[in-house]
Image 1 (tube, rainbow, N blue to C red):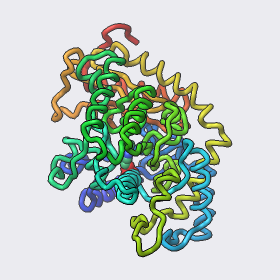
Image 2 (tube, rainbow, N blue to C red):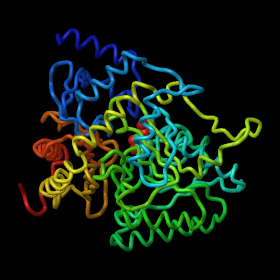
Image 3 (cartoon, rainbow, N blue to C red):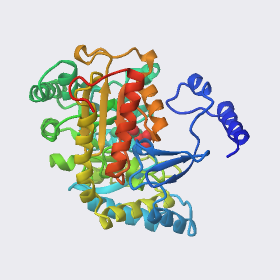
Length: 461
Ligand SMILES: Cc1ncc(COP(=O)(O)O)c(C=O)c1O
């Protein structure tokens, strides 16, 4: 692209756009933003032809790489039939086929699929199904929800109430409903210096306290299984998850798993909760459901939950919820092709050595580094938490924007990363190779050296 054309596009962007989760003053001061024009496998290609490894899978949704032939074909074929028809009062083949396929690969007990368009909506749907379920089931006092500190469930108002974060949502506080918050094992271990086992016990004790203090009032526990992604890749063990679910069920609450980020192979199994051997009453899916191609989300429910909504028209038991593009046929066609790739290419088997490689490659570069406070990984989701003084748990001031400057520096090495504060996030497409994992981590390490001026405490490389 000619320099004039590039400048014109940047001017249009700066003049007319408002980007999500972005301080626009800083954005508009940057005259060299990345304008992505194409994708090829695990790479993004900008309008000037520069290639960048997609180290965060286009915000955690791309699964098999960009321009995957089977997904391109499924989308194009559906476009020759129909682009959209409504799910309100109509159905279509793709919606029905995909529902069957999702139930076939979902944890046991889930039998029904409710579509929406984004992860936040999938959670909003779960929240509203759970709330209505208890009204219909004759336990109207069950109106409270229990979630973990710093959980993130998306940006609609109900989802924000569940996943409140002071940093992002402080201005919305007056509009939010109160939610019970239990600290996760990560908080006890990382910030209060407990050993892993003691941290889990403390976290479970606190969750139990909240559950028993609110007997008969909890509608649902909502949790991101194994990894609290947006919190900064906070991980917990499968054993903790299992016991947390037992505590919630002992109090009669429904259990909702938000697998929007962890679903579709990210943690090494199709869904993270499989590793704990527990099934939820409601499960939220999004992001990778279409391989990262189209906006589609789904909330899966058990038959017990579904049946509570059945009745005569005059009883008004139906679930009155829906969006115009719910169950969009282009999206369901791609989602079906996505699941077919998982089967045909045995993706979950293929990624196991990649997960091991990522673990070793992270340790080799970041373990013992003087700026590294913690390395966390579940499957192909990983976070490296940096601090000015890790021993004293002292972060850099927010104004220093260290994480984002490190990711900016990594671009020189042709890798695109987006951090969460000063946590470097690595969440590549599942199609990444071992060489690309090395490239991604080398770029991050060079960025750390350049911006954080750090050195290895122990081994050097
Ligand atoms: C666990 C979890 N739930 C929900 C969401 C919201 O998804 P969306 O951005 O598609 O609304 C996200 C997004 O990162 C997420 O990580």
